[in-house]
Amino acid sequence: FFSNPLNYFGKLKEIQMPVLIGAARQDIAFPLLDAYLLAREIPQSYLVTYPDAGHGFHHQYYASFGALVNAFISEEYFA
Image (tube, rainbow, N blue to C red; front, side, top):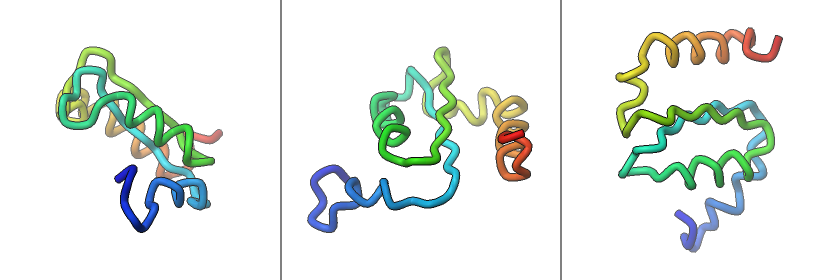
């Protein structure tokens, strides 16, 4: 991803829409640092982290994360 010849990482700044980034501190597949990098590079990004969850945080916290996603896509998140 970071060293791809098509420079996907460099193109993140070109995203022109709100992006919700969910991440978990104990995720061994996608380290939390990756989420912070995405949030830094995507102009209209919103990062939500779950400190006591792993890779399946959206299953572990399905009610709260689901409500957050619903609010985000209905634009209530920005109110």
